[in-house]
Length: 600
Image (cartoon, rainbow, N blue to C red; front, side, top):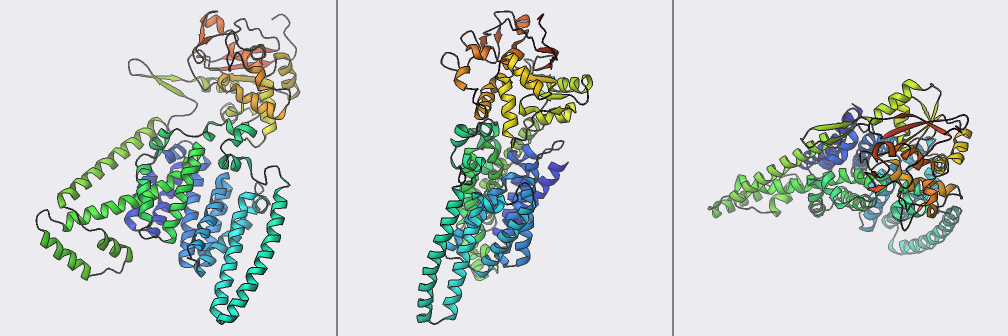
């Protein structure tokens, strides 16, 4: 229940943030959007856990506390924002988005001349305390002050101190003394900043990536990961999304988002400017990496709530005060309203600025909005139930009669490992299945989904791309007892290891020079038929996938995923022994023999 609990907390923090920026109605609409949006449901369904469900709450709550600190100028709220940031750093590596977005917002306020003591107090408390708290975590440590992702916060803090000093001098000195002091300050600042900048640049140049992490560089340059870090590019969540994903995962929120950005300029406040910057940057990052749709979802909901709130305010006021035929009466009502100015600046501004429309159109508009929101809720509920609530290890398909057919091969294979192998047995597979194997089979794995250890994953990729004898030697050195592969050629399951194999080659080749991608390419492209390269047909991955496959589909049978015949139907194994194949041939387990089976 961790996911739903933190999803509820995210809705509350979103409401608080938007209410602080705009109004209570906008906050309620934003909270309702974030509570139902499919992009966030995918990470917060009951029965599963994802640290991003916790991280999105920490992100929205940190932003709320930061905006509150610069609005009130309270050191207390600034410290609270830094504590929430510490929680975000503890839960998700995407914390670098926060530590860059907030300095960008503060810099924008300086550029448009909205510097104040409240901004200085809130921002400085957040940056200083947040950095110190982040350094406490071993996984971050001195990276909080040594990597380029964190430099922007310090740069803006130094600039803000300079602006604060200039404003202080201007308020205390005479005009002549101020001009002399300003000239001296500018000269000194340029010299000091030049020395500091030179030192920072020199320090950054000691790293080939200029102190940027691989994931950050892949966002700034979408082609970087495919060129230099294939393990990042191999993850499906790190690919660019299809345009339909924005509508599918965000639905009504993404449609209203542009209107919300326009509405934020009427009037432009510190909070509304923050939402605009957050929205623009999130659109870019989510277009580069589909995983970052999670960062876009909260701000899309906030902006959609603001836009819809403004529209509903006009429609409801028109339905209450407007008349289709009695224009003079309407004018009297408007004059009466103008005479009773509300103490709330936003409400009074909206009341006098937007005018009225005929009541019939207002009622029609309200009915249309109710219909759109009802359809939005239906879509989100359907997608959450059908797309995001099914166990990831149990696959389903529709039969011709409309029924549901279940593929339970993953659970079958993990159950076999748990019940038929020694407790201390070591299992090797591609890293995608590491966490599942540990949890479901209760066995030690060679690599898991923690992709920080690139060398270990490259070692498995190298073994899978090697001939059987060479792969056997490598697995024996690593004390591996069992190897399993995922194969979808019989039932048409496209997310199998044959389709992922080129990523194994690229990742393995990135560490071991004897693995070359060109050696695994057939006539023009990657293939597994009779025109496939000899190196490909001799790899361990090919043999473990297609071993005995011809006995099921025949020598001329086709692989249903690739749509071609096998290049080598007569696969024989000498150093590995098949011990389990699931019902639909999706999970195949092999034992690493102590001695080669020369009789095979």
